[in-house]
Length: 494
Ligand code: ADP
Image (tube, rainbow, N blue to C red; front, side, top):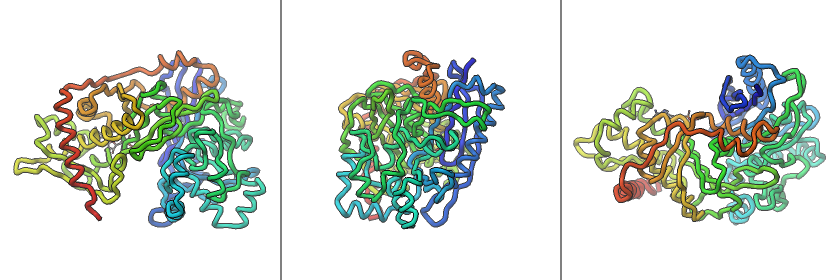
């Protein structure tokens, strides 16, 4: 039996899952690591913490699986995206803590880009809406802080990279400096049309090209694990940002296939094939992956508050004890009783883009109880996801025929059924719910010849399918009322 070790380096934990050659997860290990908040709105990770927690997760998972290193066919890496690292090319020493994707310290740099009228140019080249999330301004911030550092960067003595790049460097004993096209597409420095670092953007942000990693395919052997790690050289055969790996792990290989990850927020990606869609709804165009030199693109949208609304019911309103209580409460009602909750706690994202919107509950009557509120919170997750998916369909002129679902909140059957009802298409949960790690494993496995593309199509298996159970008129009536509720929440803080 051969195995693949999938490294899933996330925002709060580093994990490793070992998959066997039938793509069954056989062992896993996760380590949390420290979050550093130097100032309000600033978030950092110590690169050494990222590395040590990931290294230990790999070694521990291999030990738990009880397998020999010679049977590990490849290692695949998937990672928190956009988080920015800068290290010494020779010694690997860090020059700054990693600036995490959530960190808002570069908002003023982004404001300046906007004021200079550069947002359209950025979008045309990168597919992104200019924002402090992306790596480009974070790297600029690090270099601007020290003229000496900038000089060293210009001399090629430093390496910039996202987490995939850093892990590949460390795993290979410092011998490779690469990043894959999905991670590159989140830097705001990468031209998704030409598939190369963009000189205009580098100039715009004053970033020397000497410190950039080589951009490689998402599924390809890029280097080998240093012998000191597991006692032998093992191919590092995949790099992909977490959402992209999840799209692959959900086997959304064809244009028009989409996945939604239902967690604290929701992350939706739709495969748009070889087309880069210029979204009119405020969605991002991004890489799905790049394989055999061929780029596949995706539309991406997210819902800021999804599972977080359920946490709010539990922690602030205290009307449930645990998240799963919401299902029985919702099912105790025949319908929503006209109650809608718009969890715009932090404004509304695509397709509304209203930072002044605030949370709202409408339709309350004397008979409204906690079951109505719980149901409305679950429904709001489905409505918001539906809004994003409908924007994707409109922007791409493609019909979504089914939605593949993963993430913690997919445990809720009421939510999954209601999502199918509102969308009017099947919502499908896979057998292996660890789709991010699975995607990294699949990308790595194909690169070393463990699986063919035809076999990868067979590997993904559905576990539960939810089919629409209401008429389209009924669904439209519900959605129309939801939109009216959103109008009530809009612009509240202005
Ligand atoms: P993340 O990776 O964002 O931390 P997870 O995928 O672990 O999120 O999912 C956790 C989220 O899902 C929490 O916000 C929680 O409220 C929600 N959740 C978990 N189980 C349920 C459930 N049975 N019903 C509704 N929401 C749930």
